[in-house]
Length: 443
Ligand SMILES: *Cc1c(COP(=O)(O)O)cnc(C)c1O
Image (tube, rainbow, N blue to C red):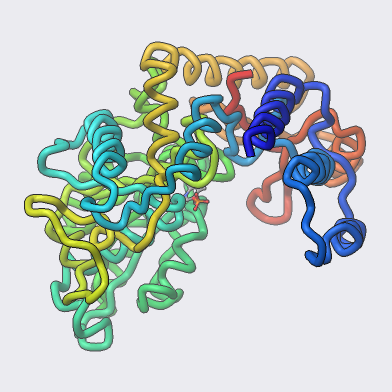
């Protein structure tokens, strides 16, 4: 086995060091990939692992978009730190199961350590809050809604929504992440109980519309429960008016959630963190380490200042097979959605430890600076910027696109054909589209 691990290291190192020589993407056709796999792998005869590593490496180099490439201006997938790659390998090798503390004391404590550090950065008190690693932001948002429902209706977990006389409603902006659509279905609230609030011209959740919708819903006998503010929307990087939403929720006695899946990383910056003011008042926060903490997928995080509600939400009466519980420990498998769970937090722990906070601050602020530079250069070349955020997501269009001389689709087709860089497009109001470039990259 020894040499196989060496082959692996050589491959990973070569990919990491020489990624700039690759195209960001090449042409991919599902039939070509399927035929290749059918030809090569019928699983009848064993393949030596060294050959297998080389084969898989070739396949991956050819047929994925290289999200860690310096010219991938993409969908919140960062360049990953070497510490993260190493940590994921160690997590696989040691394979601790983080369901119960007694089974993986060191791993659970390392996660707790890094989560307490980040809880403080979000302005919550680590001693009176709870935090979990999740598969990603969608699971963290899901955890938030389940917890908010349990806080408002302590019997929700036992009797289900059907036994609740109210009709609880969730509010997000039209720019919010659509994980809430699935969450409304999965929690039993129903997709119709998700109200998408208009955005104002600056793309932030429109407070006037929110006030009116909540007023109308109360009048119609519904029960406004939960507002998810977004701190860095997926499309345009827009940060909602966090303090105003916090005030509104506290006046209306609603749960104030902040979905900071991508933008939350700014709490670790020097210059960007001021834009998240108001997040410290949240009942719960979603943040994805796999978006702007330079760690590999999947590493979501859920922070909440109501530990009792979380315990109540995810408790089970008893199990016959789990190892013993430890007194004074909030057991992971009854603190969230997952049961057996991989050591997600190690890559966050090792990335923060290896870089140190100062380097981290510098990279985040430098990414923001590159975003501003891109914006300035685009304006200089007569492009028009259509979003407004201090964070490094730039959405841009051009007069020729607006009048129909060309389209974002045509531009992207050419760009993807060349394979030198990758940016995406977003749909604006109506049918208009703009190009979108995001910088989550320390290369
Ligand atoms: C990416 C994203 C999510 C979903 O997170 P996953 O890690 O993909 O599950 C939720 N909210 C926002 C704002 C996001 O950008």
